[in-house]
Image (tube, rainbow, N blue to C red):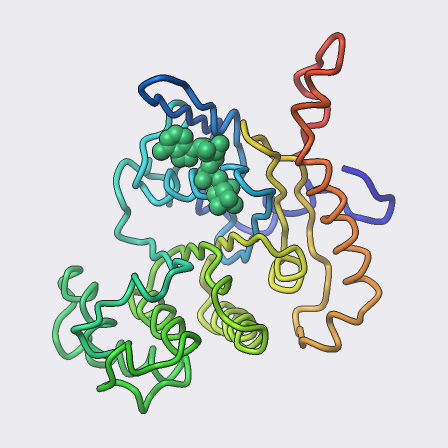
Length: 292
Ligand SMILES: Nc1ncnc2c1ncn2[C@@H]1O[C@H](COP(=O)(O)OP(=O)(O)OP(=O)(O)O)[C@@H](O)[C@H]1O
C-alpha cells in the first residue's frame, strides 16, 4: 500500500471483533464451451462482526463473481467462504442481499408489506412477529405509509427503500449490498447512503457493500478493499479513519476525505493494469504488489 499517512491495512479487519465472514483463498474459473476464464485468482479477507466494509474495483474485476460465491449462489473453484464458522455451500439463512436492480427484485403483484413479509414466511417466522418486523422495517426506511402500495406505484428510490426494508426485516447476520444505488439519481443516492449508515449504526449489522463509486465507498465504509482487474486479487485494504458521524457536505469537504479518496483512486487506477505490469516483470515475486 502506498501513501505515508494512510494507516496500515492490518489495523482493520482483524482486531475489532471476531471474524463473521471469512473468505479464504477463494478462486473461481469459469469453464465455457470454447474457453476458460479465470475470474478470481486468490481472495482472502475477513469481515469482523459489525463492520461496514466496501469493495471497489474496475469493471470486470470479479465483484459480482465474488458476491455470488459469498451468497452461496456460485460454487468456487477453490478456497471457501465461511459465515459464522460454517462453510457457505448454498444461500445462507442468515444473509440478505440488496441488488442494484430493485425493479426486478420486488414482486409487482405483491404490496410493499407483502414483499417484505415473503422471506419471513419462508423463514417460518410466526405471523404476529412478521407483522411487527414489517412495520418496524417500514418505519426505519421512512415508508410507514406505503405498506399497502404496490412497487410500481413508487419512485425508484422508494422501491430501493423497500428492498432495504425487506433485507433488514429478515434480521440477517450479514447484509450484502451489490451496487444498490447505481440506478437512482444523485440526490436519492445521497439519502440512501445516509440511510444505510444510520441503519448499520442503529442495528449493529455487518455490511459488505460493493460499488463502482470510489467516493461512495470512502463516505460509507469503515474500510475499503480494492480488487484488481480479473483474475482478481486484493490490491489494497485501507481503513477509513473518518469520524463515525458523517454528513454529505461536511464529510466530503474534510481534507482527510480527499486524501483517502485520492489514495483509493490511485489504487483503482493501478488495479486496472495490475496483471499487465505483473506479466512485464522478469522474475515474478508472488507476494509483490499484494496488499491485505
Ligand atoms: N458465466 C460466466 N462465464 C464466463 N465468464 C464469466 C461469467 N461471468 C463472469 N465472467 C467473467 O469473469 C470476469 C469477472 O466478471 P464479474 O461480472 O464478476 O465482474 P464485475 O467486477 O462484477 O464487473 P462489473 O463491474 O462490470 O459488473 C469477467 O472477465 C467476466 O467476463
